[in-house]
Length: 354
Image (cartoon, rainbow, N blue to C red; front, side, top):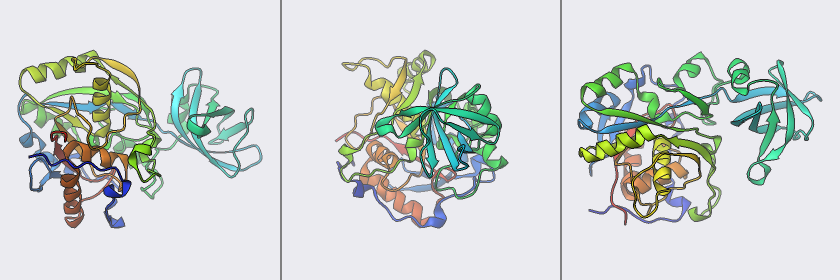
């Protein structure tokens, strides 16, 4: 049965969310979260630890191995005015692109002192409509951020970052630094769960997508076709392409852990013309997945619960059907699931495009 529904209005992706359901801290154990099984017509309340039993031997779990950097910096201008920076992207030559919040924007050629430890030179504006600042650091930005930066917690988490956040807002397999937001569905995996998956004959592979701050950007237009997606760097390597091909040949399913993994895989597939096989690719993506999108790689999706009216809610609605997903969200609210980055998860199955 086809349960997809074409929608073009942002209000179609709205729902009422009690503020107390927004998780402010992670579950005591990574794999201790709840899991809403939405693969069937009726939602089933489960736990993340049930995942090995919900998958099949020969299925392939694909993770995003990006590593969250301590991208938030506090500083001040020479005038003494406070500045808060969120580094969006690290560039060659000790340069970065960053969002800056200040009472008055610093001018090109000026300097900002961060953490009372180092000065950054403002080179100019960059990005769409000059929304970013181009800065030059005095040394390796990643090293300076690790030493002086703060964990870039999402705007809906209301406490300042702590040592707990430095550990738990990071996956256990994070390898490639560059993200300013975590691939949150993967935060649920720990050594015990990974071992159980391996024992069940479930394979693993990785992609990289450096999640940008734009993942929290609100949709400010009513018609979703008018929304412009932010751009993020991703890589799907030859090893993962081969693992997907082997999985397909053996009759297994490709399971994306998180929307960032799905966006990377489908972005790579979108670059293959005339229905050809998936190929390795690295570069930029601003793919915007909405109902009606033709998925070519991913069969199942493990994902956390997303913001109302967000592009990620549109993505999961495209994947598993708008009416079905919105019904699952109503169930999640009624059943007091925990929402967003530190919240619970859901498992979805791809449905045929309308």
